[in-house]
Amino acid sequence: MFKAVKELNKKQQENLKVEDTNGKLAINPNDTLNIIASFFKEKFQTETATEIEAFTGSPRKLHQPITKEEVKKSFDNLNNNRAPGEDGIHAELLKYGTQELNEQIAKILNQTFERHENLDINAGELIAIPKPGKPKGPPKNLRPITLLNTLRKALSKIVLERIRPHVEQYLSHSQSGFRPNRSTSDVAWTHKWLAAKVNIENIAIKIAGIDMSAAFDTINRETLLKILKDIVNEDEHRIIRFLLSNTIIDTKIIGATEKKPFFSNVGTPQGDSLSPVLFTIYLEHALKEVRPVLPKPSTPLEKVLPRDIAYADDVDFVAFQDIDIEEVKT
Image (cartoon, rainbow, N blue to C red; front, side, top):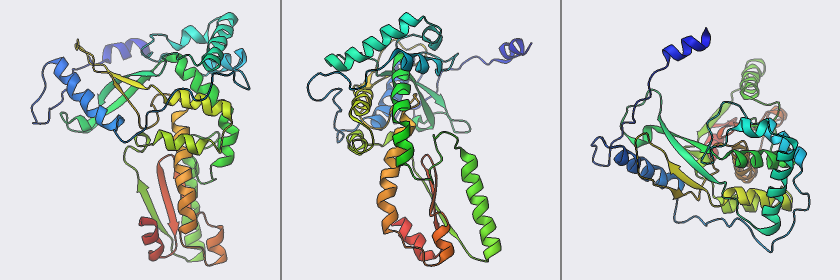
């Protein structure tokens, strides 16, 4: 019954309405494709960024080869009923495959790094959808959804599982985003705890929140790889480098017959479970440089209170004087 009601209430998908730089509405699907592809190309590609090579050094085996058990676990963690990427492979086809499939996939992945063979799995299909409550027309009011190849998602889960202990050790306790057994509840509880301290201790607390615009899309990949060298081992670093290389985005529009693929060389590729974790590492590196230059706590109470509260790219700095807030801003 619920499925029937859902089908009956399903609205037919409308063609996107976008405007060109002159404010004119595009009618032809190919024109719409060109406008959207050009807009997001400016966001995901920059001339100042260095193109990441998929492999460095001579071809060599991984010190810890990818096992069929790791492949099976990554497949099991893929979500059902998800649109596939350019490869057209649905997660269910891998998830419910045979043991032989897991063995063959593990063999292919290991040979990729042993022989420096590119699998061409880093292309993504960009689907633009209107942001709720935003005027239709300006491309900036579109939200990009990237559909990645299923095998790439699985490889991302494998390396994420491997680096998780290193990441947990590197991140500070203030970061609650994309971590096991952590959520926005931790952030809300911390703020409630601070409010209680204010009432009990009769003190004033200043909070300066920073809201980063398109934070995930501004990461310098070369800098990220340099940061990761001190956190993960060689195998993990090689796999992450591979996943950050040769990332191609192909915009898809209903009715469009043209293609406008472009290389993306900034940010962490959207659509897999590894990308947000890489961002938290990148942000943590910046916070580790900021914290030492902030004003030091002057009372015993200030020393036990958290100085920053973070969830992914949302960070609140806790201060006790207006001058401290000015230090945060600078």
